[in-house]
Amino acid sequence: MSASGVEASSGGDVVLTFKVKWQGKEYTVEHLHTGSRVGELKECLSDLTGVQPHRQKLIGFKHKGVPSDDTLFSAIKHQPVNKLMMVGSREDDIAAAAPTQEQVEAASSSADDEDVFDIPEDEMAPVHKQAMFLDKISRRVEQYDIKLVNPLRDDRKLLVLDIDCTFFDHRSKATTAQELARPHLQEFLTTVYPLYNIAIWSATGMKWVQTKLQELGMLSNPAYSISFMLDELAMISVYIEGQGGLLNTKPLGVIWGKLKQFSQKNTVLVDDLRRNFLMNPRNGIKIKAFKHAHVNRATDRELLKLTKYLVSLASCDDLSAISHRHWDRE
Image (tube, rainbow, N blue to C red; front, side, top):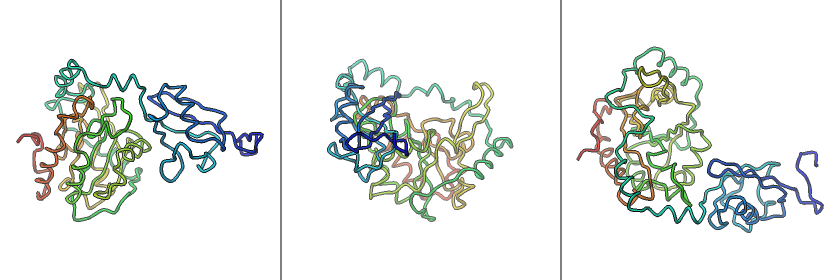
């Protein structure tokens, strides 16, 4: 073993270990070395997971651009243990993804069901003025760091978007992230960008926020740009009587406390869960959850309706003075 903790092979190559996460499980590949190629790693992963090499997409390489199967690991920045994520499906899973008539009917019948972890509209509690929760927001303002990805335009309103089930079906299987993107996503973002600064707020860790946006092509599209991103650490928990205790929510006050050009008058949050509007009930637009992507993508028009609504909102002086309850009604 070398002083750096990386074993060297007899030919002088450095022996590498890869820990690859796929569908919630971690797979370990050992004894490849810097003289090996990316394609060899995919062959090993195929033996472990059953996903054919050509179906695999490996995320997490410290390399400019996506390395090809012929790329040597000596050309990629490496560590003793390299952690990656794999996207891809087995052949039988891909075949099974084709929806049956029963699946189409089941997805259609459940499309308007409330998420089991959400709260009904008539049980939204007036917690947004309670001192204990406002104190939590103040602490987030002090502790949470918002890092700008692209410059803000001070003359534009702010549109905050959730990811999972809002414009990405994170529960279904697919070969690429694009297959799970909500229909008309890029058209939606391109149209609203001239009118709004766009921010992303997900109830997951920042690593996965960045990974999902990268895979969806949202960080490199020349037609629009994402201003900043927030993750689960910016959220707070509130207690709602009768709802089983604490619920996590997304208080826009964290943004307003950090970026003074934004306020309840010029900010809207789009999310599939109503509970995320608890601390800013006048600034939330609840969108229908996007699930069963393979079944519903041919008929889902939610982002087209949202585009039309947000364009009409852009000229309003105070977005919190408008009820967004029935935004999707023609």
